[in-house]
Structures are given as C-alpha cells and as structure tokens.
Amino acid sequence: MKLLCDKSLHELANKGVDVPTYRSEHHKPEIGIVHIGPGAFFRGHQAWYTHQALQSQGGDWSISAVSMRSTGVSDALTPQNGLYSLAQLDSKNSYQVVGSITEVLIATQQYKAVIERLSTPNTKFVTLTITEKGYCLNNEGHLDLTHSEIIQDLATAKESNSAQAITAVGMLTNALAIRKTKGLAPFCIVSCDNITDNGKKLRAAVIQFAQAFDNDLADWLSKYLICPCTMVDSITPATDDSLRELIEEEFSIKDNWPIKRESFLQWIIEDCLPEDRPAWEAAGAVLTSDVEGFENAKLRLLNCPHSTLAYIGVLLGCETVFDAMQKPNLVAFIEKMVDEEIIPSFISPKELDAKAYSNEILERFRNPAIRHLLAQIAWDGSQKLPMRILPIIEQNLNDKRSIASLSGAIVAWFLFLRKRYIEKEELVDPLSDNLLKKVSLCNNDIEHDIQILCSIEQVFKPELAQNQHFIKSLQNKYKLMLPLLSEGDSTEAIFV
Ligand code: CS2
Image 1 (tube, rainbow, N blue to C red):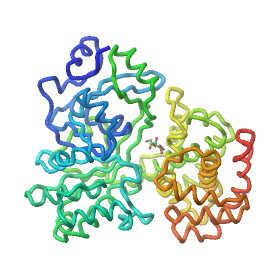
Image 2: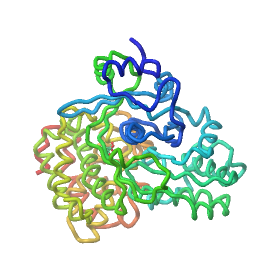
Image 3: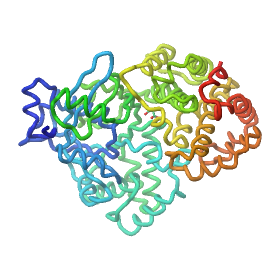
Image 4: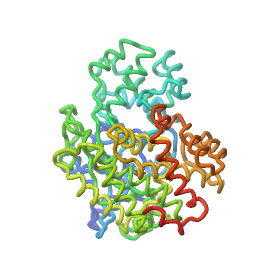
C-alpha cells in the first residue's frame, strides 16, 4: 500500500478525499509558525485550525513541528512530508488529510536548525503543547529556579545564547535573544496547554529566565513579548492500531500516524494577537478579552471531572471514559460534585450557561466512538491536580463551601498511586519516584496516610496542606474509599 505523502495527494483528491488545496509536491506555503510538542492534541487541534485557515485564506503560515526530544513524530511524518489524516469520530465519522505541517524537527538532534527557524523573520508565532510539566513552574506558578533542567539551561545561557537548551523556556528565550540582536521583533508565543493563565505564566517564566542572565533582554521582552492566554478543547485519545486500519480502509493508503478526535473543538484566544496572523478565526477560533472565564469553566467542568473519572474509574476496573460513564453511582458522584462544588466556585462568562455546558461535556464523555483510556488521563497527576482540582478546593475553603466530593477526587488519586505501587505497575508522572516512595510508607491508618498525602509539597501548597478542614475532609473520604484498593468494582456504592 502507498504511503500518504505529497506524491500520493492528487490520487486521494481524485478519489474525493478532503485534502489540502494550498500545497502540492512543487509548492508549499512558507513556514510562519513553529510548534513545540507536536503530539496528538496539537495535530487534532491547532494544526487543524491552521489547516482550515490555509484552506480558506491561504498565506505563508505553514508549521515547523518541533519535538524537544522524542523522535517518533519525525520518524512518522518526515517520510509523509508532514501530512497526516484526521478522523473526527462521532455519531457520523468524517476524515480529511491535514497539510499545515511542512517540516518536522527534533531539538536534541537538530538544535541549530530549530534555532535558525525560530530566529528567521518569517517565524511570527510559536505555539506550544508541552503539557503542564514542560513549563517547569513551581506550585506558585513561577519558573522553578530549583528545577534541574532550568539550572542547566541557565548555566549554558550565561555562556552563550546559541548553547543547546533542553527546556522549552530556555530554548525560546535563547532564540528571542538572537532575534533581539538581529533587530527582529519577538515571535508571539501561544501556549495551548491546560494551565490556568497559561499565557501570563509562560510570559513571566520567559522574562524570569532572561532576567537571570541578561537584564536588557528581560526589559525588551517585558516591552514587546506577546503571550495570549488561551483555552483549548477537543477530546483527543491516543492513536491505536484500529485507527490505522480505519484510515487504510477509508483512503486505501498507509498513514504512519493518523489522529482521531471528537468533532467538538474550541479555541478561545486572548484578543491581543498581532494583526499579521493566520485566519484562525475563519476556522472558528474565538478572540475575546475574557479567556479567564472560559478557561476556568473548561478546567473546572471538563478537566476536573475527567481526572476524577480517571482515578476512580481505574480503581473500579474501568478502561475508558465511556466505560466509567456507564457506572451510575460514579456519574451521580460527578454530577453532585459539579452542582454543589464546582459550578458555584467561579463566575462563568456571560455567554456561558455553566450547567448546560457541563451537561454537554458529560454527553461528550459518553461518545461511544471515542475510546479514551482512563490511564492516559491519569498521567502526570502531580502536574494536573494543581491546575484542575486544587484551585477549586482553595476557592471553596475560602468561601466556606463544601469540598467533600473534591476531596474524594484527591483521595482517588492517592489510592491510584497506591494501586500502582502495590501492583508494581508503571506510574507515568515526572514525580513518580518521589510519589511511589511516599505511598510505600502507607499503612492504612487514616491519619497517618493522609499526613503522607499532604506532605507531597510539590502538589500541595503549605497553607492547604495544613488546613484542618481539608485534612478532615480527606480523612473522611479516605476512610470511605479505602476498600476501593482491595475490592474494586463491588465498592461502587460508596459514592452515593
Ligand atoms: C484530559 C485532557 O488527558 C487529560 O488530562 O483531561 O487532555 C482533555 O481530554 C482535554 O483537555 C480536552 O480538551
């Protein structure tokens, strides 16, 4: 079977497949965007928006996709000239070929090429999906100057800004320094990760990094660097063999790495983008001054229930979000948490009815065409909980509102860690060694174990870890939920 690539595009077009019209074997739009972290989410979301913008308005906005370390995306997409197929799975499936990526680089192996790409006048945007841990922030949301990779990057940046950085913040700051020397404007950096105030935090992190070795650079960045906050949304499960087969059947072509997602998608961007930009709005992106409201709503009403479902679902022996949504008591638990503890915790934007929005989200979780593994959502809990659950708890404690169900979500994470330790299964989390060491000390004594949980200082800020109401609430839930460790499915009733 032929491989999807420039050469095979016209054949697909002849068969009526929805393919890019703005590129061919002989002509491609210039690169105007560098994307760091070209995982499935980026390829289902921002690369699709740029593809749609190119389809409707053209322009030199193709993307150089840069992985910091992993070679997988380059191995799969370089032979395909950056092309890949996207399946939108819902009550009716639809398929298309996305062509907005025209270059794939790996920073560790092609650092010079990446820096050159970042420092050419044509590169106007850098977009990022590097997940929470990629920002190297501490639990106050500031650049973590004690992070070993930041320490290393600062040491090399002090020597020379062309020295190889290993963090995204280090690499981008070095490239910005080169742009300043060349008399170019900074690129605009668009964070597309599930982090509260993502743009603000990223901007502060880059400036803080610069401050540590070049005050003039830091001043220049403070004046000119634009980092809009964004809210991104589309459920994008990891690619599996069944998707590769589906694409082979649909297109009669081989695609090394197709992407699947639900048809729902949303990109809300703070309205401060430079004029010269891809026609993302034409593809449905929304520019607004109130990103914070949408971001809060999404992190609280989608990501918080998602993680809660993931940890409790795994303890109940479920495999996917869809499976977990078939457990009536678990759904009732989530609905109660949403109604009593989440919706009252924030002010939603005027155009958003929080209850209706939450109902739609729970409906999306019930999409039978999406096999979203709970184990995938459970990854990196130490990085996710401080973004999607703990701020709600802090707010509710402040407002004297219930935190009972949210404490259940935290306890479920803890029991999930314990389960991983007991079953000697891999724990995917940047703090895995530390977390496994902590749970190895548990002895099922309620007070003792909750003290261990609260001592995870990278996750819980001291004020919260010492809050007696929070501790009590965790203890109550732990007592109730401990049987989940040994009894699995039979204990579902404890959630009502
Ligand atoms: C999920 C998100 O993996 C996770 O943690 O909660 O990736 C979620 O699917 C997206 O934010 C949906 O937009």
